[in-house]
Length: 263
Image (cartoon, rainbow, N blue to C red; front, side):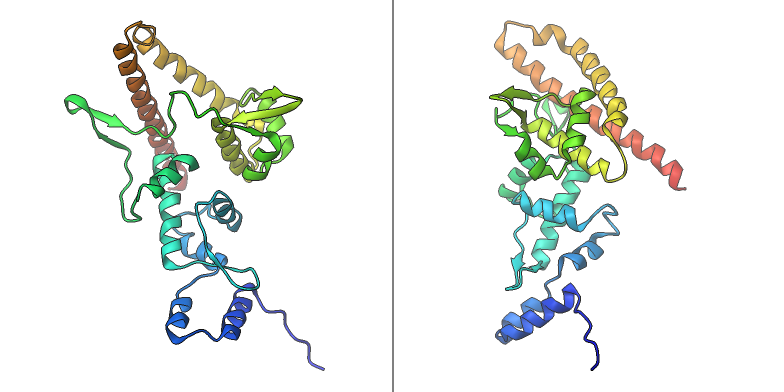
């Protein structure tokens, strides 16, 4: 008796869709849908680090909602792919955390919209867009279990980050909690860890951030300590702007140096 080959995921999806015998209009729509593997392949040229696990993570974060076949396979429409491309561009070009990306999409950010690294501010000065606010956060805290589940980081990696002072967290009732910024830091480091970057390698990032924070503090210290609420608010706005400029400048310098490597 001849052996039967096990169908691939893509072939299995086609078999399930065929078995449903959809109306002609629906069949045409489904022909334009892509499996998660096909989506990765379609976006790989623009986003070389795209992976199935990363797409699944974005779905876990409620940023994507692909349709499922009865067998549980994900199917992505062209609209889903455009939305995913927009999310990846906002991460890469604007350094936006997922929380801000979710807000942008909810506000109607168009997939065709260009990156927005800055805008015109008062008196014609360029006001840069911060990816994370320096103002007080929401106050939300996430247990270590929640952080590990959402970021797919390993507990060992989080312990390394604590050891090297990259994240601190706080103990409550015997459980360690992290705020939303530290959760995003852990998610970013977990992505770096896929390429062999460990907690000990991140001291260079921590040292650089400390030096930049001290520099910006020196520039705006008098205004930030002012008792005048309006002056202090202007100083915080300026601090946000300077932080965004510094972030964009670091990105440009990094890209410039990396281009020398790939020549």
